Image (cartoon, rainbow, N blue to C red; front, side, top):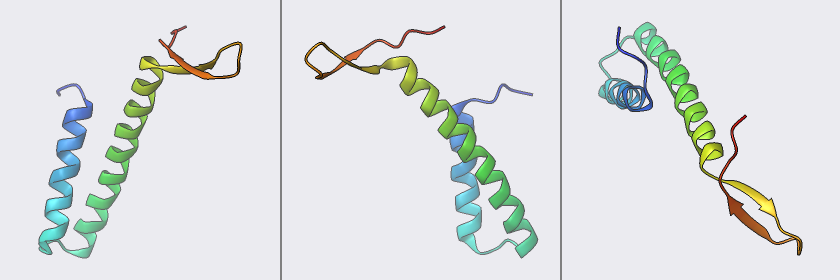
Length: 74
């Protein structure tokens, strides 16, 4: 099985939306697609959150002004 990535999850979300908008799914199928979509959404949001933290972190300088610096990983 291929590694789960942001891009593959986003593609799966797009496919789910297209299928649900078609109106051709039964209620049971639509609910399963919805559940899968929620899981993919959470996965994508988690990756976006982690990526944002890796890129920048807001700090305050001596004057209390916000400045951006690279995020230091542990």
